[in-house]
Image (cartoon, rainbow, N blue to C red; front, side, top):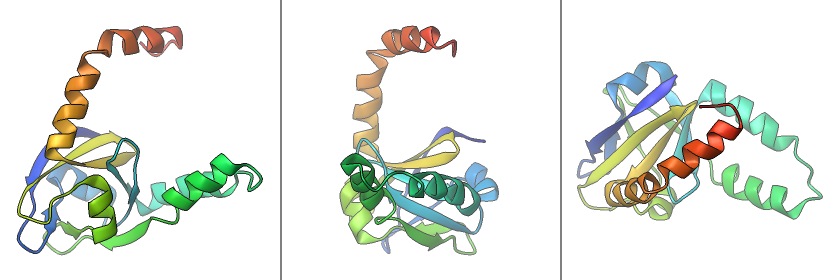
Length: 147
């Protein structure tokens, strides 16, 4: 299970070290794609196969399915994790997530079966906004028997 929040710096070649806690679980090759809320999603290959099979089985007749699959599957790239645990995110995904081209900070958040990759400032803003509503969110989850 992928959980936790880790802030890492990217180097001058735009490489980012994966958190040690994630390296072992996620593997030597990952898939990175457009996420939701302007972050990136990163999956290990086994999890990616499960997700992509589910998405691939959606009806092509529905515009929302087609659009989401184009963004999510069409924007996905396989990325090798180098020998010291770094990844290089393609420029089109970096741009989508607002990751700076300069040496800067990136936040990795473990969300059960995937890792989200955030620009540090976007993550702080997103987290602060959601913390304002955490009681309401907990109430809704309680209706589903989660909490």
